Image: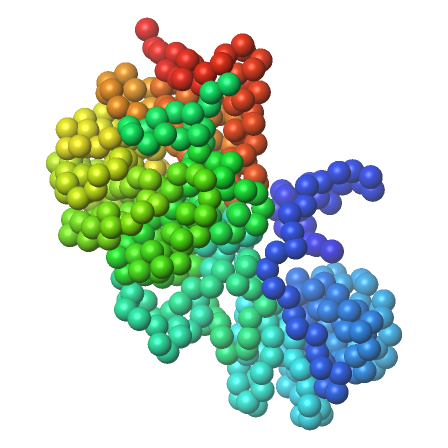
Length: 203
Length: 303
C-alpha cells in the first residue's frame, strides 16, 4: 500500500499484475506487538494509515482483544479506503480536518479524548512529523509511553548513507564529539523506522 | 583472466572499490553480499573524535543525481579501530581508510593511530569534503595546503597514500602535481561538486546546510574529463570516481587512464552495484578477447 508521491511511486503505480520488480527488504525494525491484556490505541494520520492498518490486522490475528483505531486524514479523499476491512465496530474512529468524513478534528484531538477511557494501553502512532510531535507531547503530559513510526526520504534505505537521519536525545554518557552538537543522529531506515516516545527531537 | 591492478604497492584483486561515505564501514552491505568480492572498501571518512554531522535534511534528489550535506558524520577513530576495522579485516579485500581533519594536526594524529594497525591497506586523504566549515576544501582547494597535508601524512605511514581531490578548483592538474610532489602514491578523483537547491514554496534551501555535494550520473562527464586531464599530466595511479552506475561507466574511466574506480551513489540504489560492475568488466574483457585489465587501462587518449 503506497501513495503516489514522486516519479518512483508513479512508476510503481503503473505496474500490472504479473510485472516483475526488484524488491530489497525487509529493512529496519517494526512495531512490537501489544501485550494481550492491554488495549492497543493506534493513532494513524494520512500517510501513516497503512502501517497501522497492517499492525492492527496482525494484532487481531495474533489474538489481541481490543484495538482502538483512530484513522485521520486532512480530507475524505486522503482517507484509506480499506479502513473498514477489519471489524472494529465503534472502536474505529474516523476523523478529517475538514469534517468531510467522520468526525471533524485531528487524530490528536481524538487521542486526547480516548486516552482517559483506558487504563492499560499500548500506544502506536504513525503519520506526519507534526502529528507525531503532538502525540508525543500528549503522551509525555500523561506520563505514557508509546511507539512512533517515522517517514523520511532515504537515498539508500539500508544504513550506509545516513541521509535519513533524525535527531534524537543524546545518551547521557556520550563522550566528547568533534562538532559539539546537542543531538545524536539515528537512521530512520535501520535504527527505525519505529522509535520510542520521548526519543526523537522533533523538527 | 587478470583483473588485478596495482595502486602503488597495494595490489587490488579487481579495480572496483566502494567510495567513501557510500558504504559506511561495510557492515550493512555484508548482509547482502560477500565483501571479499570487492577490490576494496574505502571507509566513511574518519575524524579523530566522533561527529554527529549536519542536522536533517541532509539529502535532496536532483536531476540525475543527489545533493548531500551529511557533514562527515562518523564514529571517530577509537570506535573505528575497536569495532569497525576488526570487522573489515575478516574479509579478503583491501581496507582503505579515509581520513578528514579540520587541522593538519588532526590528519597527523589520525595517521599515527592508523600506522600502528595491521589490516589498514592504504589511507585515502579526504582534502575535498565540501560540507564542513573548517578543513576539507580549505586544504584541497589550493595546491600548497593540499601538499602540506599529504607530506605530513606520508611521513607517518608506510603503505600507500591516496589523495582525494576536489573538482571545485580552477585547475585540478595543479593540485594533483602538488600532492604528488609531496609524496602521494595515488590520487582519487573526483569528490562531489558543490551544489544547492531551493524550495520555492518555503523560500528556503532544501538542505539544512544550504550547500551540499552533488553526486550521481549528473557529474560523470565532468569526472571523466578531469580523469583524462590528470592522466595526461601525471604518472601515478589514478582512481576514478563520479557517477559510476554500471560497468560501462566504470570502463570509460579505466579506458581514460584510471587504474581503479570507486562506486558511490550507485550503492544507494542497489547494494550489489559494485559486484555487478565487476562482473560486467569481466564480461567486457571476454567479449573483446582481452586477458588482462591492465592492457586496456589508459588506452583512450586525446590527440
